[in-house]
Amino acid sequence: MHWSLIVYCGVITFLTRFSMIFLLKEDIFNDKTKKILSFVPAAIFPAIIFPPIFLDNIGNLDLDNNPKIYAAIIAIIAGYFSKNIIATIFAGLISYWFLIFIILN
Amino acid sequence: MNKKLKTLAKGIFDVSPLMIPVFPFGIIYGVIGMELGIGPYMTLGLSIIIFGGASQIILLQLFSGGASSLVILSSVGAVNSRHLLYGAVLSEHLSTLKLTWKIILSYVMVDQAFAVSNTYFKNNRKNKDKHYHLLGAGFTCWTIWQISTILGIVLGSVVPKELGLGFTISLTFLALLISDFRKFKNIIVMLTSGIVATIGYNTIPFKAYIIVAALSALIVATLLTLTDSKKK
Figure 1: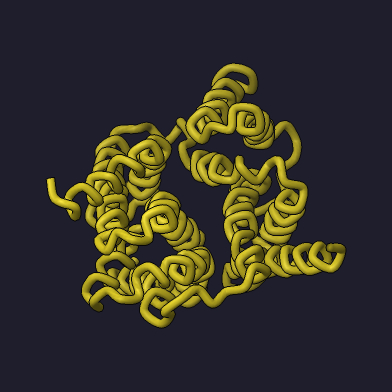
Figure 2: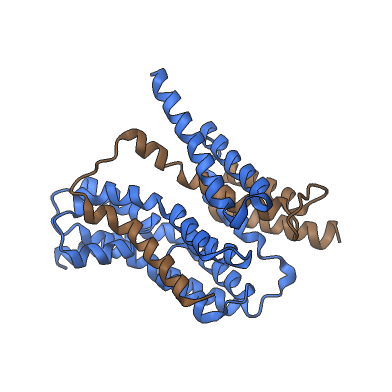
């Protein structure tokens, strides 16, 4: 990786934060636009979450006894009930370790 | 204590509880950076120059998957597009500030700082030093993020690869979405994004699967929002 790429990514990130504060005197987005923008995390994060869980190292669909799928389901259940970010991560990670080191070993 | 310092301290105080999940996220980021072999300086460099957890992880993930710079840049831009909303919402409170202030505050306007300072601004319109709240909240996030990154770098150089910590990327982002699990529309949007990304991972050229998945999901979100408002 080149430092230049990191700097460009930094500039883009900064511009998304700075542009509206710099350009606007008041909030111009209507409620509908805001509602749609509020979906951005839900629209992007699953694109980061899904492929490493469902695909193997060479990118083929891996649905048979895949410990990541089971662990992700446990994390979702933990998150749904606890509403706690750390509890969700640990529920997923510990069940994943339990599966790969004890059950499927 | 004068008004400015008081407001600054309030910002630090308000954002502190939100730092509890940020800290492990930073550690995970640092560990992943080391596991992917970009080295300690770049791992920390990303945290200082970009200062955005989701963007940094996407950058690492796409880079290790062999994506081009253009795809990485546009994916980072897409993840950060939510900041346009934050900026627009905060603009009325910050419009009278000098340019230097706007630049400094923009650099630290991350999700957690936005959340607490937006609430403070709404409730304290008359405080003409209210921007100190965002300064305090933002730099608290910044400090915690850098410390946790460094801890992650240290840990990452000793943690064995067998632990499969790469999986924590998925888990961390999944955990960031827990507030959406109870909303039916958000579940549809999430499934659209995830399924498109999984199918597109190999089929969409240039590793542009994140952008394609995000755009597809946002189109679905737009349709859901528009059909909903028609009903009312």
